[in-house]
Length: 119
Image (tube, rainbow, N blue to C red):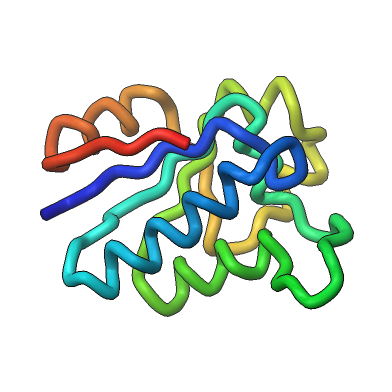
């Protein structure tokens, strides 16, 4: 089963971004496929490195990058949300794991996937 994950929350605004990461790991471990994570609204802040994380917990940013590298999950930032929330130097310096995409790309993925899960 293909699952599209949509993240609307920042990594520090609530625990939903971390819950999304754990969900993806569990889904992949269960044999499901997560072709992409689409970050919209404040979720685009997940692409910013350098934020302090709780002691003993992995950096949310690094965890996203690991999911992309180890599981082949594409990390897509809503281009409109990133234009409103991130300054241009931050967008220009996005790591290879993250790339901008429009809502049309998200809609196309949603049509191809069996499930869409939103956090």
